[in-house]
Length: 179
Image (tube, rainbow, N blue to C red):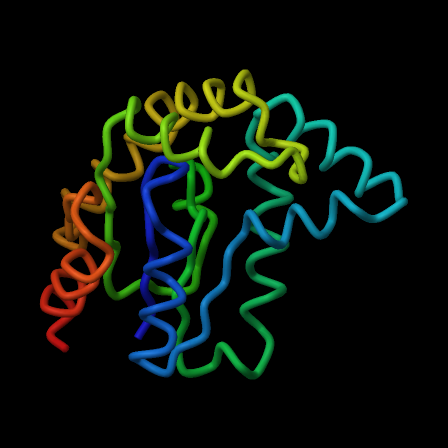
């Protein structure tokens, strides 16, 4: 099964992605994690990725699609995956040719996202300043909402209230996936 998790930063995608991976036996892949690892590299690409992240901007579509498709060629993703943080733009949806079964959208308010992220902020990530968080929330509404609308129109979207307990959210996702 190929599952995409969509939601504003702080909505619980990584928590639910890891739980789903454990329960369904499908690997979890976070593009945010991939790019944070790349940003640590002392290479021109690593520095570029870090600059973009620090500004709270999205990585370019071509780079993101290329990185994701490269990762998905690994044998561990042959039977499916749980993807977090991709696709974020309609251009990425159009370029991504890997077939998706379900898209789970974790809905939380902007206020809840900022509150959660402020509690988690330990300064260890280049993209966790308040300004960067606010910029990513703004970008989510501008750029990623059309992706959600696209998957909704295709009948592939499952929307879950992400302001419930972790357990209730997880149960609702599993039910929506027929598990």
